[in-house]
Length: 355
Image (cartoon, rainbow, N blue to C red):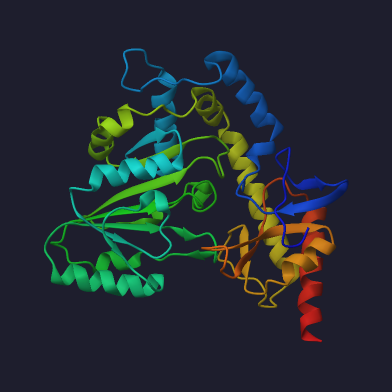
């Protein structure tokens, strides 16, 4: 399979069957394992029985369902944000924010910003820290409002982007910060509450957080967190009114699944700690505190693990001609024996490189 695309006919959980061989699966973005969580699937069945497979109408129509506002209140409370708005995908949530802000401020995009948040503006080439320095200079030079777009987490190189510098921005400069937390919401923060509380933006910085709900939360949908005023404005935009919402059956299941999410988050943390204790401090893998993905610059690790029955994430990025990005991704479905097997294999590879 090395160097080939793997075509599946079923969604993997902790393991995957390919051509009759069982592999442990350490890839994907279902960090809390909801895609294969049987209790969550039962809640989804309840939602489907109540709301059907989908609702293709507008949220602005005269026929409305309380589940949408209930889900948004639940998400806002979890994140610690004033208000929330759901959409049919994280990408649509991003586009709603971009379209809403495009006449309100000059756009500045941090390195690695997801394409859903792209628009006409200033694209910086370099590291995130270099971009921060550039933004601080621009903020000191100009007077017009700025809209900054960035990720909370670099999911490929597995780095948490810092935002303490927000307090160094000029106090008289109006700034909107839109942060993509798709790979952090449900995983990072207390109880998986995401980036909102930790960003701690000063008064002159308006905060918007965008997230996919299709990763940790396991449902087809997207999320915007912000002030009640801003969320209301986006609600009334033609881009929101003209789009179908997230399927209400999934939003119903998500609200009912609060205890499942918390339990899965604790299991994920346990798996992270067990794995890190097992493979040691060889320097082969890079991550940050309590995060379930690990980056390595050593592309040979992937085929070596594949021979031993472990599939990890590896693909060329940003173009097919680039070097492959190699990562190990844990999820809450992995059992202790899975984690121990992977840790022993990674440790053995690191030791083989030292001899």
